Image (cartoon, rainbow, N blue to C red; front, side, top):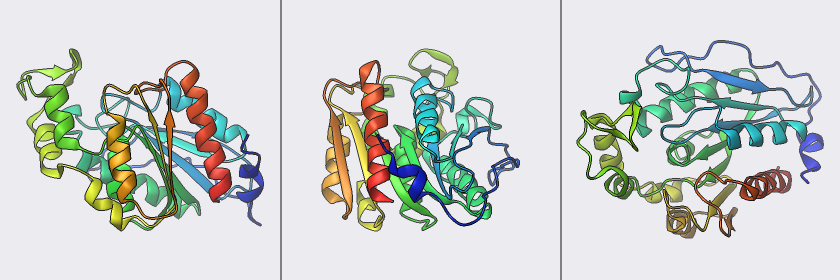
Length: 259
């Protein structure tokens, strides 16, 4: 599985591990974990999580460990306001998280890495918007990526009152007007597909009841080549149980084929 990652990622000089402090444009520190790969591996996989998540979600950690074991370094991080990153969760919007991701990309680029970005759920929407405007992202992976942002809000939180309710009954995840307004303003990331010309992998479970697989199917139809959509039968939104390994294999094999 993915045996090509180590050899393709090699260059003629050693790369520096990611050790510095990373701040977004608001000065908030972004918490991250760096997984070292081969000493001379130039390509770096950056992983971003979904709404109410963080860098330590089990399937995110599993993906990071598997890719690093193949020889490619990985950086998984928490968006501002999530996990141990600085900032207020109430200000965690897709638009702000695009700036978070670009701050991480800048740090990686300054260290000489070539960036592959994998985003889950809302982190997938972040990846589409970032990749459409930042050519430092060289490969894009959407894992159960959110596309129709306005419809997502209406479906999941339409009966809640912003600034008084919370997301999925999680007191630590207050539902804010900023979040609502941002998702409704974006409406959908599908129109940005035409602006993405880099290799793009989409992985989605057929039993996802948070972000329906039709989101990935819709944007995939609009995407440029080279593109690939992997549908995982029976998989839910967080790739539980056996779907986790299938998702990991899809990612590693595609990276090996694409680099």
